[in-house]
Image 1 (cartoon, rainbow, N blue to C red):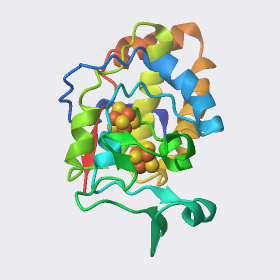
Image 2 (spheres, rainbow, N blue to C red):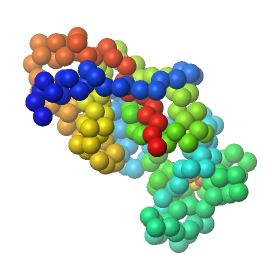
Image 3 (tube, helix red, strand yellow):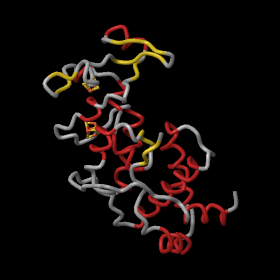
Image 4 (tube, protein in one colour):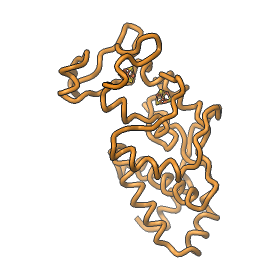
Length: 211
Ligand code: SF4
Ligand code: SF4
């Protein structure tokens, strides 16, 4: 794809579905992404949930388990693998009195989940209304510095690549966005300024409801 085509796609991107109530501060985009790299390596998200349990209550969100986790936790298997059991209302079987009753031993899927990924354009089913409401509590990422604006452009380009079908796996999100990010950092300051002036003020992509 030529750079003109990339620019054209970015210009026409649908940067989507914004209904943020802004109750939860997210801080700057670049700061979030810098921390995320470590979070992904440690498989331990660092989300200031502050009593929110929406992802534990979302009936349509399954918690995938490793074989070892399935041995020690209440679980069942479907065609895609092991899943944590749910209660009749669709919430996790281990959510008791609105708290995780196995917090220290919760599965890696729970430890590494960060709903703020959806603020970056990670798809979310429009039927997951409990989760969508929680994601909408976050304010949009702030873009105070050039680094933030470059990060925002990279995320936007990445979202377009996914939408264009050039990238299929959302789990590859950060490694690919990171490559773009460093590619932009290798541009000359004048080129960066030009890009930022043209595209860097756009809002970062927000919740993308699909399905
Ligand atoms: S939906 Fe987000 S804020 Fe709420 S508990 Fe899950 S990760 Fe935390
Ligand atoms: S195991 Fe704990 S953190 Fe994971 S979904 Fe269940 S209640 Fe939530």
